Amino acid sequence: MSVRVRFAPSPTGPLHIGGVRTALYNYLFARKSGGSFILRIEDTDQSRYVKGAEQYITETLSWCGISPDESVGRGGDYGPYRQSERKHIYRNHITKLIGSGNAYYAFDTPAEIEEMRNRLITKGVATPQYDFHVRENMKNSLTMSAKEVSQRIGAGEHYVIRMLIPENEVVTVHDIIRGEVKVHTSHLDDKVLFKSDGMPTYHLANIVDDHLMKITHVIRGEEWLPSAPLHVLLYKAFGWDIPVFAHLPLILKPEGNGKLSKRDGDRLGFPVFPLDWKDPATGKVSAGFRESGYCKEAFVNFLALLGWHPESEQELFTMDELIEAFSLDRVGKAGARFDLEKAKWFNQQYLKSMPTEQLVEVFEENLKEHNIPAEPELIKRVVELVRDRIVFAVDLWDHAHYFFQPPDDYDAKVIKKRWKPGTGDHLLLVKTAWETLPQFSASALKQSTIDYIEKNMLHTGQVMNCLRLAVVGAAKGPDLFDIIETLGKEETIQRIKKAVLVIEEK
RNA sequence: GCUCCGAUAGUGUAGCACGGCCAAUCAUGCAGGACUCUCACUCCUGCGACUGGGGUUCAAAUCCCCAUCGGAGCACCA
Image: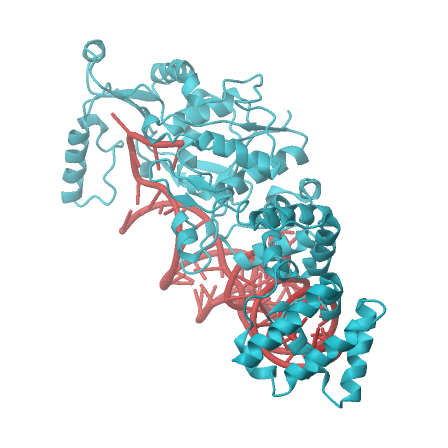
């Protein structure tokens, strides 16, 4: 039987990176085993539906290179792939469950349930829930005649359908990552399977769809582990084969305790979403990795290693290499802490191997934004000079803007440390020496400068640092003579004259 | 509170199913150094961990028990 896995998000907001990782692991597992990866939209809760969320999910997966074999957009033999379009299917199946005595109608109002809970609490019951202790005392098809049940339903009375949890059993969940997880049914409650609005709950819809879509492995977040026993019971009640489970460890916030949340991103200033997300209600924008300058390869690579470790010590993976190396039994059990530094490191690694042309494209955009026209040759040259010192492609501007616009101020700290009486004169004399050079090349400039320094018994740093300050405005950047050669004779001379004038005046 | 899950350096982790090769891996981070006009890059060196307590054993990071700490779940949400 061929492997079939699914990613089944709810369109209630932007996909969180934990969700993206779940999708990624499903995808890797499917590809590795030559199986299929299905994208199913779980939109059974109309009240929580958020416009644009489904689109966001699709766009995220597409950005990451995670392409579903079957989905709303692509279609497939097991559609529809949106749960809201599968209502009738759930209806049919729940009827079977009632027929076999595994589920029952319940007419209790929310107030009545609340009252029941309060009663249990005063009796000292630790977990006041709708279960075998109380179901015989509630308003449901277990306690009333078939006639009364059909009368109530016929009269249009609101009702839900609940799972009848068997009383004294031990349910075993087989999980690739965690081994066997055993839970006694006395701790489970009679979960609602069908809501009074005519929609199934997650539990029912999920099991029915997974079975109908022939899902072989359920790979999902750890937050589902507690409800896995219920799901096993449901498969059994239907008489279906139970898929293999794999509950992925949580992604933890960078510092402190708890799982990573949207608020952490806002608070600490880093993205927790793959793409920018504009909340349709508030208009607030949450930052995404893509817009923050991460390349998709780095993002995927980073995510893959968040909770999974390959057999080798390899850290840099292409998607194909990930598929090759991935296996569920090497997914860790403990929560994986989100480490932004590591994410940056990945991005830097990918930036290094990125073709110059791609970086040039980014930088051309930057220049356009700043209304600076420039020759393609020059742009390329600049990108080559600074590309080693950036973490994000968008950093190019920070590291290269001075090639296109003269500094408008000079780093005060550097002035204080390096600029001595007489420095201005030296710079002007060096400049004069340069002007007589037959060629304005880095090597010639360097030779000429060294000659001057030696002849006047100066220290290298004394002159060089101030030259850099005059040309760049700060103590940073690539080789000074490369910068000057790139800038050209006229521009360099202008900048030195201006710098001496401005700094000596202070 | 109850149920379930987890715990190796600042962080991510390897090692744990089959106990000795573990004076514990790799990377990141940090510190120092080399290079150098500067910032980066690169290279070198260093820092730093088996949550605690019992037990089993000749031998425990690894197996067992307890404790502690942390997490998740406990809806007509998914």
